[in-house]
Each structure stands twice: as C-alpha cells, then as structure tokens.
Length: 489
Image 1: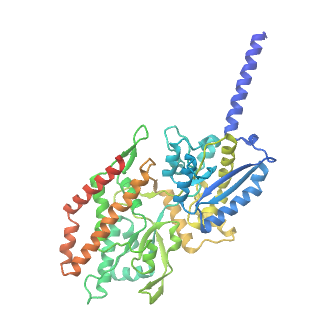
Image 2 (image 1 turned 90 degrees about the horizontal axis):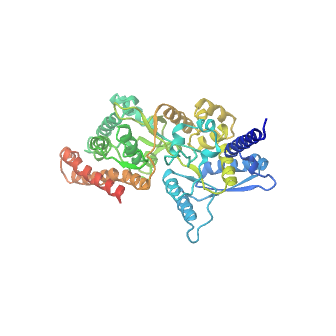
Image 3 (image 1 turned 90 degrees about the vertical axis):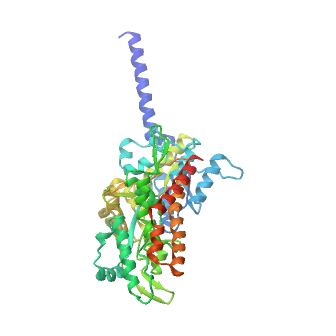
C-alpha cells in the first residue's frame, strides 16, 4: 500500500472519529462534567403548594443521586407567579439595570419563550436528546416547543393540564328527575345551552310568586379557551401560520356567530353566569351547578354549598368531558408551562438537559404532576392504570375528585385533538382580548337587560332585542375590528 493510500485512510479515520465524537457529544456529553468540580444549574419557577413541595423534593433527590454522580448541582428559586417570572427572565436577558443574572432553566409559557427566542436567548434542547428519546414524549407537547421553522426545541415539556367539566350531582339529580335531562345532553355546547335553559325554567318555577328568578346552570373559568378551541374545532382558528411561520389572523363570521350563540346568548338570558373570581366560587354559593375549569382547578370544587351565608348542605360532585360543537371532531385545550434553557456554554446546557431528562422520567414525572392536577408528559405515563399503581405506593394519595379528574383528562388527552394557539409577538394580547371581548359584552348586557326587566319591560321582548341578528352584527364588527387592531399594532 503506497504512502498516499495510507495517508488517505488515516485522514478518513480521523474525520469519521470526529463526526462520531461530535454527534456523541451533542447527545451524551458526560465527558464535559466533572463530579469533583460540579456545574451549578439555577432554575426559576413559579410553583406553590403541592407542586412546590414535590419540586423541591425532586431537586434534593437529583442533587443527592444523579447530580452527585455526574457533577451537577441544581438550585431552584420561586418567582411567586408566572408573570413575575416572565418579567424577571426577560429583564435578565436584556441585562436591564438591577436585573439578576439569568437562570439556566426557567418555567415558561410559549408567549414568553417566543419573545426570548427572538432575542436569540434560548438553547435548542433537541441537540441533547436522541430522536428516540424525543419520540417518547406526547407529540403535541413537543410540537408546542418548536417556535420556528428550523425544528429546534425551545420549550421542553414537564407538566401539562387541560380542562374538565365539574358538576354538583346532588342538585343535578333533583333537576334531572323533574325534567328528564341526562348527562348525555351535556356532550355538546348546543345541548349544554338547551339544558341550561331548562334549568333556568325549573328553578324559576320553584318560586312561582317571584317571576324571572331562575338560576344559572353553568359557568366557565377561561373564556379564551372556549373561543380558541371552539374556533379551531369549527375549522377557523383565530391564529394560523403561513409557510414562513408568520402568524395569520382569521375572524370568520360564521364561526363567531356559533361561538356567540352558545355563550353570549345563554349568558344574557341568565342561563350562564360569572360572579366570583373563579367558577368554583360560584359553585360554593349555588350560583351554578356545572362549570368548566382546568384540571388543576378541579381540586377547588366545593364539597358543600352555602346559600346566603346561613344555609349549608353537602354535595356530591362528578367529572364530565368538556362539550364539543355538534358535528365536529372532539378538541381539547393543551396548556401548562414547560421549561426553557438559556443559551450559554455547552456544559451548562448539557447539564440542564440531564436534569430535564431525569425529571421527566415516567414515575418521577407522575409523582410531580398528578397530585396537583397536572398530567405527565411521556406517552407511556399518560396511562391511568399506571398512575393508580404508582399512587398505591405513594405516601400521598389522590383525592377522589383529583382521581376522577385525572382519569377523565387522560381519556380526553388520548382521544381528543389537543390544541394550543401558536405563539407569536402578540399572542398574549390576542388571548387577553379573546377572554374579554365576548365576556365583558355579555356581563354588561346582562346587567342592562336585568335592569330593564326589573323596571317593568317584558323579558322576552328585551331579550329578543339583545340576541337579534342586528345585535350580533354590531358585536361582530366591534370584535373583528378590535382583534385586527391588536394584531396589526
């Protein structure tokens, strides 16, 4: 073999070796770590209550096991609320006066991650996970963390939630016995509105000497979720993206009419309401007997109802699926913060990935999530039988309400289409308007309608005025213009 052939083979071997080493270092860079000179990783989060306790326990376990073995120390700090956390991280990245040094990992929603990604501040976590490892996570959870066309992963899923319907079954049974309604009537938004109308008439008839004093049946915590999920389910999501991943606004009139008919109309007629800060507050006072809340909010559903501060009675509750629009495929919201890693050096980024990989291992992630109403993020962990087995071994035990909630939410997650609005620079503002644009109008109009009826006007005539096609046209034009102004400003 001549010397040129030998040289060529040697060079080929060197190149192959460097390629293998390079690929290996991106997926498994333990050689970067030194247990005698550990790398410190800071995490900012907003957890409280059970989540805070479970997270602190997880961090301590990591530091005393894998962290000690590999040379990683995790230090976790609470920023009290997600909004305070977001503001703090952005200030740190921008190096604002008085801002703290940026953390290595922070809990985040997509809107904040989008802003920071456009500041070129986020590491691509896909570099530190194999394709097989990524495939173990729920696809939609991974897809939410992909903020640009380059397929980089900027938000890593750690805990997710969705929504469920909670109902006071004690009062429902009395109503159902008198009217013949069943829980099957609550499977669609149209059926829910009709049932709520029957409940108003049923409760109004309980006091025949007092006209128009029927009670609301239903309330909803997040109106933005109703609007967002409903529009997507009806085939006309408010925000889509073009081939360049740029946001595109859509305010389809027929879609908004259907959303209006199934929320605004029953609201102004007194069939739906929103009185307390959360609808669980309204359930406690008997203002509603059914509500939709996040899986994390289900723990606050009351076990008793107090009327006028002087009469209290116990209630049984049940958990039901979130309704869908008639004639559509089932959709459900995907929500819950993930974690992003600040772009820094390879050692710190890799150490961060080691923690995130460890933290989302099946049993550990189940223990962190389900006791506060969240769901685990790996496909294998989204299994209620597996969760029950782990719960049996845990010192903590799922309450009856949380157990029913998690079981139903997992069924929704496995059978419904998960949806979340794409992140872009105005997504927070758009979501805020979707929350208020129909709710504020409904509350204000309900107050005006009630006053006119109390002053002697005919209820049916007043309601016909507020729920007419002309009334919808006026609302639609205002809503559409406001949405466009926010999107374009």
